[in-house]
Amino acid sequence: MKRMISPATPSSAHGRRVYRREYVERLFDSIAPKYDVLNHLLSFGRDILWRKRVVWALRAIAPQRLLDVATGTGDLAIAAATLRPRSIVGIDVSAGMLNLATDKIRRQGLDKTISVQRADAEHLPFPDASFDAVTVAFGVRNFADLNGGLREMARVLRRGGVAAILEFSKPAGSFIRALFAAYSRSVIPSLGGAISGNPEAYKYLPATVAEFPSGDAFARILQDAGFETVSVHEQTFGIATLYLASR
Image (cartoon, rainbow, N blue to C red):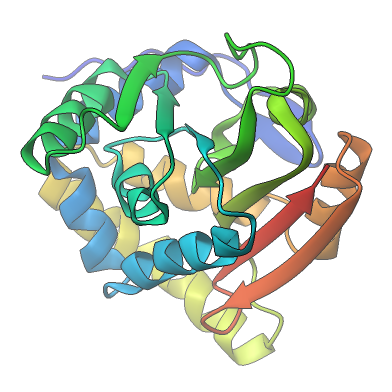
């Protein structure tokens, strides 16, 4: 029987519950082997297109040094390699995810461009202005200290650099919103739990989506964290949103 670290008593910030890092780390370690399969299955493959759009959005600045926060199994870092940067660093708190990322990067012959390391997004181990671009795909909603994590991203980004943040969001249209909510409540926990062997994880994931600020609300949080210009780009009826925040 798999034992999960208790989230204890989650605190509240920006109207959402906040979980201990140890809980999130153990949760993602437990679902790492099935994570990619379930991402593609549960999003009907749209997550692949959404990541490509993150990369397309960065082409104008041609980043040479790129940081991928909450890199998971490395899908976005690998996609960003098409930009031909000098280096990409992927960080994550989950050793299980990073082990899979390392294998994928090596198999694709990208280990000279992409490196990964275990690190906390809220305490980035890099000097100020170290990167031309910072990316995050479906990771910011797991930050325990959202403001702290975003400030760290702004700190390590050079002037003129761009942070590209892809995150699930709440569709504006009432029909799509209701459909997505029902899908999140029933299909994701049951199917995700059955395939991953961890029903708790696939209850946690849609719960964090439902509680996370999106659209203009999240754009204001980005500005408060030190980003000067923020644009909001809805994806697939607003199920996901790409935020482009510049320094």
